[in-house]
Image (cartoon, rainbow, N blue to C red):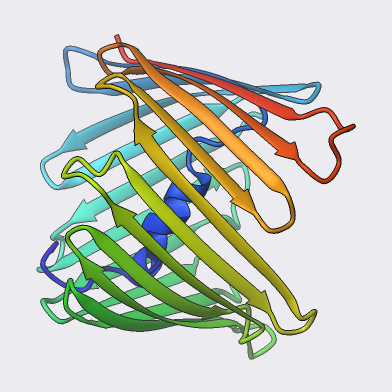
Length: 276
């Protein structure tokens, strides 16, 4: 299921991940381990501002079924069931959160060598329906997605995109927000491990005539340490340092500074992920 054009959500994802992943403005601590029975256990604590939250999760894979259950400090129980090849060339994902009985959602993904289709339906009396489709190859693909609200018989969203992928680079253009924004991005990798990369992204919002241009990159200092940075035309500067303290365990320090308002206190984030 990996030889086709990919899902619509994959268009522009590589560039977006480099510009957003691991950039934090809060403190986060997580511990992950695997029991002798094959159950993956994860405990996470997060402090944002003056508020603290936490959750405990368990993941178990049985044949073609993946079960993911998470309990949080707000007394919520979130469960996700993923079935691979329940029907040939498909992945079925069912999710719900208790005690919110209206949170149920069923998603089916179909993969073909030259097309992918995704359908997601909220499990309510008047469900919202999301559809997306992509056609092409792993090198070139075009796609679109739409959301429909059955209670009001209105389209809640429609988006279109195009992407060109090469072994060391990827370019994409996405027209979103019901045609109000257009985003173009390009990412280039300088090594086979894809740890050294540069990215550029420009977004235009037509309703406000506002343009946002962001450049960024990542650099592997050595096999254990990576640094990332980004800057946009509004003066927002972000940087992070990530170090592997022991195998598969990472500490990440990040910061964001408004270069147009140097009198403001920069934002700092700290994350520690342990996998003993």
